[in-house]
Length: 506
Ligand code: SF4
Image (cartoon, rainbow, N blue to C red):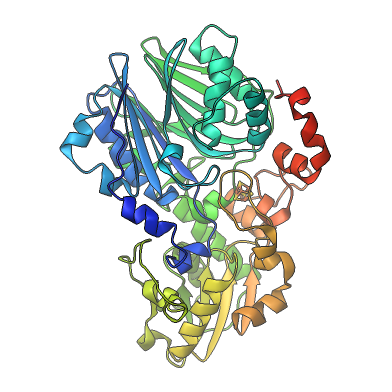
């Protein structure tokens, strides 16, 4: 394998770990998880992978990587920073030859930042070269890692994906794809994975389908896996279907082969993909994210309408819901807040005084629209509430008569263990405040959230089935759809000493 790792943005990475560097608005959101992309049988596999990753950049901005396979030889390039900063030259693309490639954009959910955790991971196994890229989070990763270490495994990174790699390496099955499936049977939690062997491209989704993965087609032979359909659009590929929850799809010279190697469970895809994570121009479960977000706004207006002069989105993520709200409520929609798209993650805010200006660096009030008006602000979620405080204040300072906040998701009360970076529970405003307390805290005249049933109605045209929920909604309901092995064992420390006896689940 040739390895072309580089870190041209080392300074940028250093700055990102600097406590004085922040992006205030982003820090008050659930962070997108990661994005994966894979393509086979295309002469420009790496270039298409880079384009696909570019379309998925919103799912992770800390690092990106591509592994290609050319006639059984694997090639890799990984870098910290954005795709467009690191995969923008002909030499880089030429260093990734071959007709198959997989790629990954990363937000460090598990394992922390740093080049050694950048995916795809590659290893020369007894059964041949194997590369893997993973979106999601394993809920038994630490347990498995401790077991593997006790058996002699040496880890080079702290990412979940290396656990998968070790499980594949140590599986007793003969065939590499069988080993991969064996590994998947041992992991718990959320995963959408693309993997590459010397002759196959593989896409796999966890049994509940928590994280998304779609299958597309570019030409007769060339198939694609991607986290979202926007990555198909950018290269002109057709969307075929979602990879089904619990499905492992293998594509090679023999064609497309699909298996479902896990016990069948009722799917529980992440409902937050519809609210915030996915791009509005993507399809999720075959449905337009943009349309769903507008429906969320309409349901929100039905549940919590107020007499107002203007509906104003907190851009960009609140915009589709605000359009829906305005249409349902019959209130004019205006861009009362303008977003500066050129504020990057590396903006240095060297003092507390300047750091408090953070929200104005990214958002500015459109005074002419707001002055003297009763405004309904629409945002997708409230996490810590820090952004809401600043946005409400900014709109007031611009002369709004009243500022009412409406949120296109229920109160976010619990952290996510499935590959989304969330603050600890006690940092989530809704975990320790009533709506009345939150209203005072953010300084709004009123605050309300869509109900969980309202959100379900917008997403799937039915109320939540409380006996068998249709989606993962744990960050709103605290009802996690899988066991949380690592967390539970952490909560009961005395069991940890027996981990080696317990071993991984089969
Ligand atoms: S806990 Fe929330 S963010 Fe995490 S997978 Fe479930 S719905 Fe999505």
